[in-house]
Picture 1 (cartoon, rainbow, N blue to C red):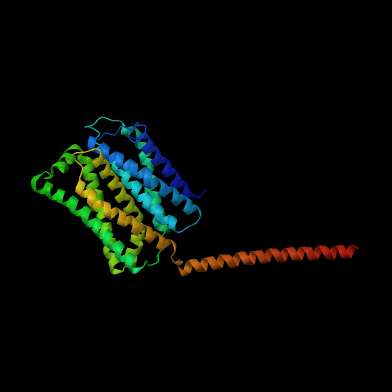
Picture 2: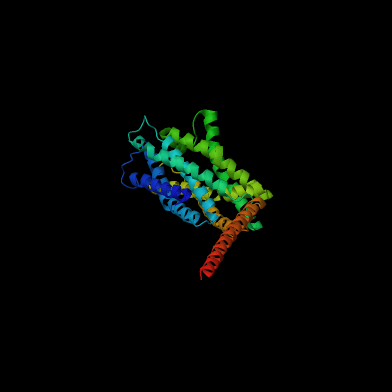
Length: 321
């Protein structure tokens, strides 16, 4: 089996093990988190099992079959798993809360290594000049990317302004969440504001302006952003369902249409990429033609030798006769 499908299968096995061993399954992993953190963990685990694992299996199968869509799916899976595992390792409070999740660190370390390796390999496998989607799809995807980045960005920045101005958060539920899990709070804000929001805004603005680089970036991160939005939505839904006092109904209601719109547009983007024209560079085509020519010549050479040997044997038999 090629290395990339094998890596994706190993990622699926590791994710399934993490979820089954966690609170959503056997409960062998006892996370050092608050009740609020446990609700978020349940939602995140459900999202990984229902969404990321099937997409990873599809990516492995498509990669083995040589389908160009495999790289996009693998990139989304790799980035989503990286976010999940980093938050899982860095988010718990190892001094304040009882638990044993550090005993399973090697499992999550393996998932971290697999996830960024898969993401890097998938990005390298993307077309250098991917097909340009239809104009309506470009504009719609740009709007969703910008809207999602703005919603998340304003929500987190408002909290950071409160902390900078007064040393705390004005919203009671957010203040309670911060007091219960400050490490998880800062991990999420760093990753979201430092990476996800800038990528979403840059890709969205670049798409609207028709930038070729932004089109490739949008293709590359579309699956990841949709998977991540769905995972966050699952976390918020579980918190509301379990009547978590730190749950944010406004964020869930705002994120729901964005997630579904992002999912629909991502499917169309993936379809556009999968059905696009061959965008290999002239150098690649030249190498392919040269290889075919050499193979043809080798075959012709082998046929000539066989013909020569056959003719020589016939002449020898005639001479003996």
